[in-house]
Image 1 (cartoon, rainbow, N blue to C red):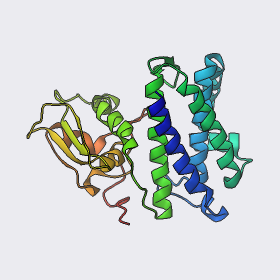
Image 2: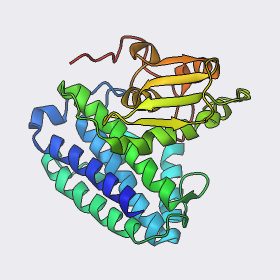
Image 3: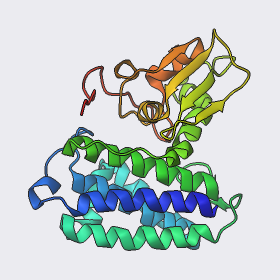
Image 4: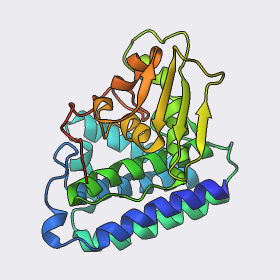
Length: 266
């Protein structure tokens, strides 16, 4: 658990360091993610880091907060508007240390918990390890929106294996979430890590049902930050049905950006 928490802290800290350097004008400009601003992206992360802290330390308070959130959703408010209601008094430069304090406290709590312990969340309960992995995926994905907005290439690290594993593990979920039949066999997955290592899921190898290529591009696809058509991933069999709709995060089905829309070339 400590290794995963160290990866999560590194991901948070890398993004915090990036946005600390933004100008007041950049904080309020739109990113490629549904027109959200960088402020919206960080406030969104901060919002769920706060509720994650409640889930880890005070399940009753988390349940009450969730009931209020559901009520706000029911009134037609989107999550970005709800986050603005909670944190709107903070400027971008004020939001970063506010968020940093919260994610550091959250990680300190998670690092002391058993990986297989259970946390309440939105939907089924999650193991502590799954929760921490999901927070890392969210941070990495929303961070990508800001890197794209700023025209900067992120230096990938092997900590994205946590996200790649989540992506590989949610093969069936993608279809279930869309009320589609789950293919009989998940594809053999062989990905090249940023370090050059090979990461493999779903052995044995297959030449009829496979996915091969960059781990970073795979993570961009399953977090719906890139269309698979804009990657160099090679695939066949059930992967050809999966990748265009792949979604490694909870919530209603969403679609990847159209081909070419976020095909960033630095």
